[in-house]
Length: 181
Image (spheres, rainbow, N blue to C red):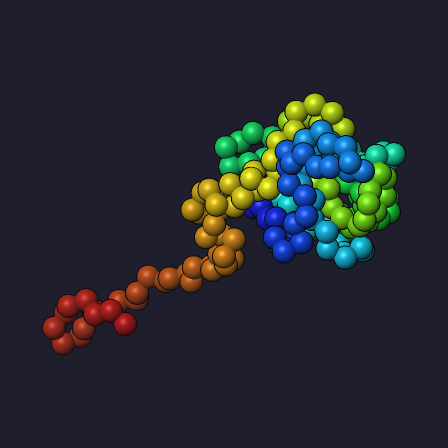
């Protein structure tokens, strides 16, 4: 079972999924992702275990990396990380663990400042077109609704149980009863 995390704290959350913005006096289409704006060059963590499914440059989204994730309900989804500072060193097929650095916050592509634009889709190329969903709500639900055993595992590593040896016994020479040592 995977563990999940938000890539950055809420204090740097700058753009919400579905929000219609006004740019240069014109209303935009609903926002297709969630934006976080920590400083340029800040390492971007993988939000869950998964596999790198796509690494590509886009004139609009800059450097993009897409990873698969599997939620507690068992459905595979795809998280896209966009506008990264440089080409990711990870390649398609690389395995990711929650928190592993997948790139750095940048301003590549059509962007007005350094930020992570992250998307959630039911297809690998959904970051570019197709169905997208609210990544922030998805991650929050995965974190909140993780099975209890998974939550406990996240809190502390399993403590190995001490091996117990059976008690040795002997026969009392005086009374003949079994005595445990």
